[in-house]
Length: 173
Image (cartoon, rainbow, N blue to C red):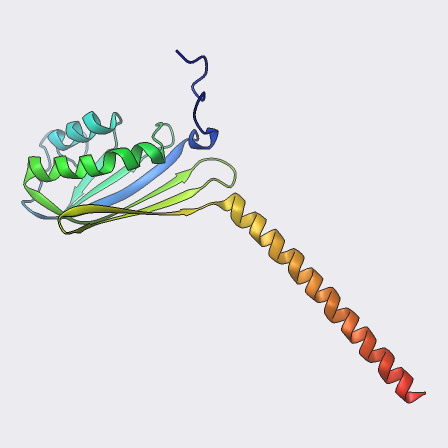
């Protein structure tokens, strides 16, 4: 047994993360459960919770399943990547629907935390998951490098102007 939760893992993956997204589908309309504390389906919530081992807030609107998760819950991007295809396949099988597309966003709650955007679609009856990541720390370093380069360019331009002015003075004399 590990002494610390972060042994053998990357520390960067252990920041609270805000999640929201949706899965759009065609087929039977998933009905909202009566006398349920949220605008969702109790069986759908139980299914997702059993796979992800976490309780998302879920809303059913038209032919869409909308997910959100607050920062108090611990659910990381690597868990999402592991679970999402199984979640979709289980929803399709249980409710006789077909996913058309989906989109999820995750933001790490830390200074300059990474942001993730996942897009889901189907190709040849297979679920395709694409991930785009914005790393603020890397972006800030890139901006600093760009600023340094601009300063160097500005200095070169100033030197060029000084040389030109000196040439003009020499020509006048």
